[in-house]
Amino acid sequence: MVEGDILVSTNKQRAIVGVSYFLLASLAAKGVWMLPDLSVPSVVASLAAVFLGYEFADFGSGVYHWAMDNYGSKNTPIFGTQIEAFQGHHELPWTITYRQVCNNIYKICQATSPFCLADK
Image 1: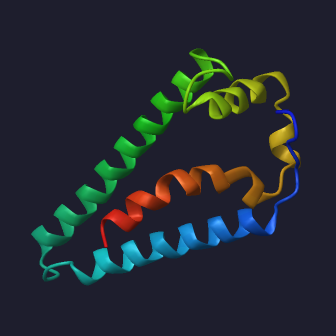
Image 2 (image 1 turned 120 degrees about the horizontal axis):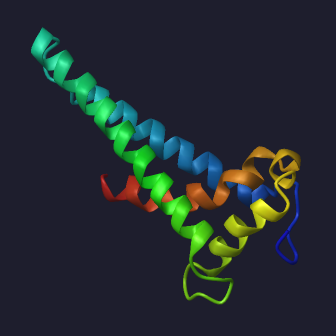
């Protein structure tokens, strides 16, 4: 574990996750609202876009995870704390099972929320 790390969720972490989920739900609602007519080509194109978006997001997160696991250290500028946490979960993999959900995902929510706001 990273020095000073805790396994329980703080109120700040819960708030970050809650705001992030609200922003994602807003984007999803906006996407549904912007759908054109429900013709077969439109539905097929929308489903294809969702599938491709999912695949690219999965690939991108895999590349990111691989890079964090294999390159840099805690002293790396900007990404140092993330690198330390990513590499640390291989040394103590059980810690992820003891963390509360918001404690586990708030950093991801923090990193992605600006992109949700950028679309507003």
